[in-house]
Image (cartoon, rainbow, N blue to C red; front, side, top):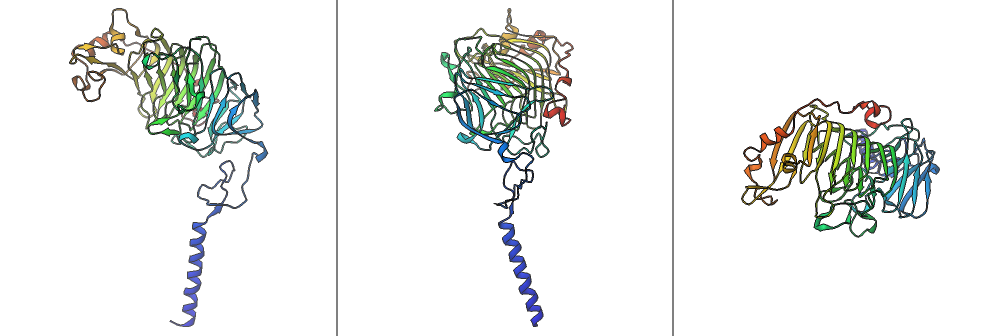
Length: 439
């Protein structure tokens, strides 16, 4: 090899080495709040650019111990659990954007309103209050970012509101610990005997890309309502792209209206612990990895067993096939009125060698004085399915199918009618789903 050839190869190797080093130590903007955030950058180059100047970003962590107001001219970043203590009111102005920091387990970010605390977060159709991930490039004054889609789930936690209204917990307990908050955290308690308890007001709230994992199979819901009383006002709520449930009611008596849930990883609307309020004018969009549009249970224990839910004026669809699953399960009791259900699943459990029925949804539906009724509802099919002989997974009755005659009995109790459901026009102007053409 002559000298010129040797010189060429030396230069080539130097260039290659330099490229390799640059690749391994790539510089760029490492701040997720910046316009030019580079997720592949390993080292910050000091050249981040912002539509929102850094003095407008307010970091919140830990307990809120005195009344305060979050304003729309700033952006708020949640780090870990931000807790509104008892006796404290958090006010959030219309148009305010709140971003949750990434993290799982005990580090999962969430806004928690503890028992006795209040939140007054009332947006408008032109200025909704938006809770989203720190990775979302939405800026102050905007309705949506451009870098996240309905498949981006579990990027932060969610909103948890806890009150003193009655719940039906296991073992006859009148208090319980909310899922998503470790039992070691006292602010996770909920339940009591004040049906008219007031936790504040939520209106025109969009909750996006949440549901961070706190443990194996345990995620935070988009909006969790534990023992929330009827003195609380909840309306015009969107939950989109949450890894777990969209909205889950654990007992309580609060009413909720104009609810949109879409592209959730588990269930759209979930009812547990004998919730006895009314959910009206709701629209649930199942995505590719969604479970049920509705998952409805009744009381879990021996206290507060008479509460009855109402679901009215709703549509449950699958984004691809225009059909969804709605599951009425353990002891579900209440009224479903003017709802398009897709596939309606009715659970029947048995005992004594699969002979005697237990008081699951099937029994409440077909009893002489039914506690579960469907009025002016439309569905593509009805499926009666069985749980196990004694609720043990290894002893299913009838291979999971309905006992002889039970399918026909359920169909006789659920006459097919035309449901008008709810109009999506109320959601179109202000929700992520409406702005991004997903309705």
